[in-house]
Image (cartoon, rainbow, N blue to C red; front, side, top):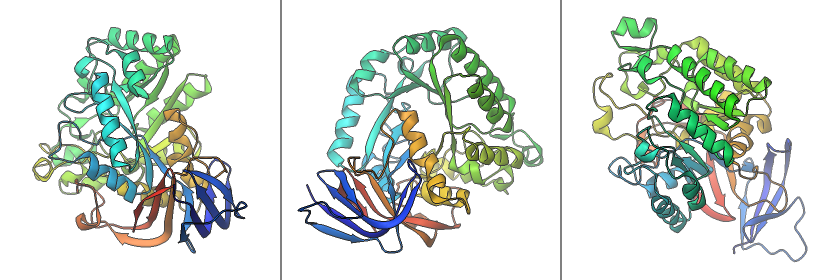
Length: 423
């Protein structure tokens, strides 16, 4: 294994709050020391990190890799390259592939493919029901043994609440985590934008906030009844944040995340039918956006994710109501997180993209301590760059941030001590 010395970098460790300039030493896939080199250490490679931040690699809870079944939108290789370019060293991928991840063989194949690429750690989320049909439970224990870290319906609804109850009862019995997108499919039916003034003015069918809050209320009640570990994916409403805050205070085993897009954008950004702003959940009222930011600050929201959903041009180059929802986001997660952080201490800013999501995944918290796996992101926090299709390595070029100037970009990414990306 290559021995690497990262010299004169700003060492930022969200797990401990550490923030100081120094050297970091990597050998045999792990961090072996910081500050002074261990006895007998000889570097095979030296990375000059003067003026750069050296931090644990980012962990992203929402990444659609599009394989198998949707390779015309993106491939496993193209998206893992994009993840590495974004400083992301671990990704969780939902089960809504074609076919869905409801068979151990599919999960094992995905893990083998990802391992052969040797880019980013991939953590599959298995299908909660067979074929994501919402009726019969998948073989969850077999999927867990194949490598699934949690189970989800992605955006697919349950046939009825009995299935949700049985799923959480089963998950609680075997201490399995269940990830759920809180949206009532009947209330959200045919909607394409947040139900409010903007949707009314543009003549777009709306999705009310109630579609989310009714679903959250139901999930929390069933979670309380069963004791199952539940993670709410991509909450988007102020009331939803309040409900999670109250549930956590009451001891309900619930966590949640938010899309980086929803931390910065609102329904006002739809403008004149910009289909890049067609997202799921929809961009909400500015008051909702502000509540999401507050929820991140006080720890109610555990993680920021990219909600990476690459869509091909044919799926986006359509009228707003007909466009496919989703946006590319792997290479934007870091700068959008920095932008959210503003003037807050950098260890605190990076917690929702390192320590927080790692805890949700159930993997060791990323750290710069000696002995930790050397999954690292070395980035320039002051570098400004323009978001343009040519600047993105993802096969998906669709994002509501096209044309924006963002600050912060990964310069090197290391996974298990190997440099998998350098700018």
